[in-house]
Image (cartoon, rainbow, N blue to C red; front, top):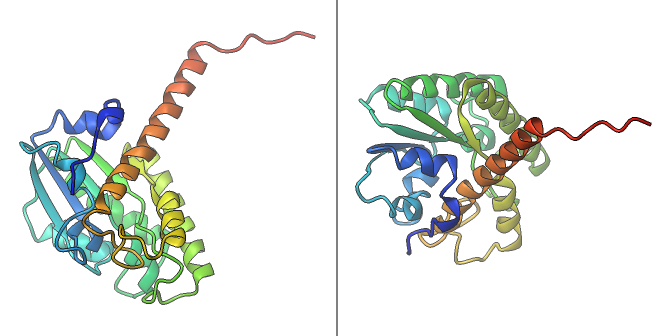
Length: 232
């Protein structure tokens, strides 16, 4: 596994924040823990570029957002920058111990953000990791799963916009890859990347933020240089 080439990401909001940080915390579920690929978290190829940054990982395979919050509260976690990637198990498992609605999910994410902001100067969020259409452990129909992913991600997007949390949503690109390449060496199964596949997850995490950042810059320039009105 090689480290991610960051040449095209120098203006990326996450990279800019990371380069000012001495410590980073990544919290989440199995994709953050590296449960199924020998212990390689999704961000490993990215963070290989920053060997001097002290990294804390708070994650566990199969957990939902509420369980992650309890894990955090049971530990002393301090970092300059934090990344939250949680929610897929709330959607896929439909357990009463998890967040059964998007409103409950956002309320829980807000509590996680508040906890991390006790020390973190910047908090980032990743949309719930997607699973392929052949996911054997999902408790609902594929149609319902797609609908819930859309609902939860839209609620998370609105929350992040209102609370100053930068959101990355690599899900559409990952879903397309999962469904088109079910036997890819980049994938362990329906949801987990292999050690080599974490490079793709890291890259797509940054790619989405690059597009959002470029769009914001375009909007800013347009605001400063409005097109002249045509008078007919």
